[in-house]
Image (cartoon, rainbow, N blue to C red; front, side, top):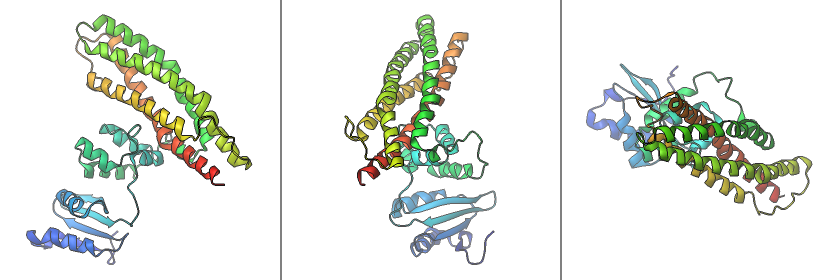
Length: 321
């Protein structure tokens, strides 16, 4: 509900040549954290890009109403020093927002260190549309399956990753390899892309099995040592690999390797679109590929965007004591 004290500008009352200069002038006199709400009779999206170009990334933009008669947008001036959250940070706080990223093909796992603006610029996406959809997710009720990963202790989270995602990979990857080999052998002459898909699956298989072993033998036990050291107030035993950043950097590079292979698979399959002559095994392969990708996205997200940054921060905290 709007109040008299709100800073509102009805743009329709202005001459066309006065509209943008007036909005810019009203925005410029805002204090940090204050907002200007503009009312217009059409979508003021061009203003967003003009402000971004002329003022830089110093504001947030939120649609309050979108037609058909009125478009109302709240433009807020950011507080100095505040940075845009990364894709990974956004998904870590609310996994529902990852569905928006997935819808537009935005990589929030391996590409989780980018901001929404950076990701949209790279892909040529309409950032106002994506930010609007991200805001809309906050109005929906929380899904009971949206587990509070970001609230868990990192030793518990590492166990969850092993018990849930490593178990999933070990159970389903052999079946994926089997169908990939079979379908490429039977249909590869008519669909040569299957030969490369099979090669990608084989390389993902080799990479993930080695990757999970390194996590379970080296990285995750060390993460548990970090938590135990903090909980017991005992000094941390030095590791043979130096700081935790060493194995984490390796794990992130291996995630990127798998992620790039999956991006290639999605292009080769045209986002898992079956050809007219697809048999049951062909259909099974595409279904397995898609299900495996869905699990992999969450798997990598939990590590890159939650577990790894928190482990680095905890080690740094312990080393300063």
